[in-house]
Length: 307
Image (cartoon, rainbow, N blue to C red; front, side, top):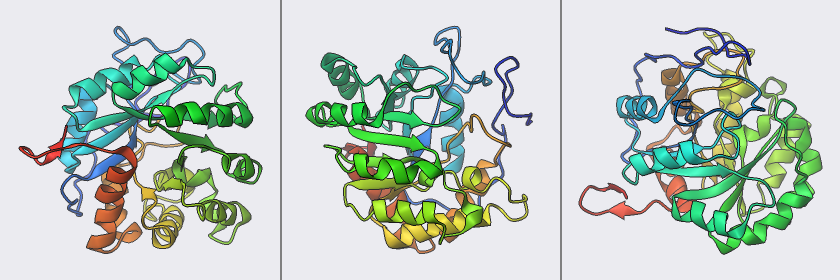
């Protein structure tokens, strides 16, 4: 079952209950490095100033999707739908038996004690949004002032921004005291091609070895493609990033696809990895080795999985 994208007044499903079966077999300990969880609202209320009201997408549904797709590790990113109340992600981490970690949403003046608590609960980073549809109220300079405190608790910085802002944010982000992860390939317009100034600026930014990029969102940066094209422009840019920066790319489905133009098929997103990371070595680097390096999963020798 699939319905239209959510609005603030009428919640709607943004994900497929039964995505297509994938052709691609993922390597052991593959990581989905960018997902969200929503609700249950009775336990974890939505934020009052949220930009939309999505259908609930609780941890149990996420765990089921990952079992079906052969994904054994995951990083859950706190969404603006729940605001800076990170309990919904903390709950999912606790239930994930060590295979799920998190990225928190905080304010720039978050107390050190709260950062330490989040770190001990399994959060590996914090995220800040610089998007038109998301109320922020925080400047990039304030975020940079936070980064030494992130370093003290072993967290990195995750930044979500509109493609055109890469030119404005590139210089101040270089001042970060911690590694910086760029969301969704910088939200560039993939239909403009790899030579467009926004994508070229992203590539230059990634020449700094402290920067990582999520090659998630082929469906967001190439939303104009027809289903038959399967996001070919987004795939091309993701492939270019993986080819140029093989050790600093991670991948994610972005399930359950909030604030989207359409409902993506997670099976299609996974099969696109055949083109994004076309060799077994590259695929393992993208899905296993890089997430291990960035998120520091701990391996349990008895189960061969994270704890």
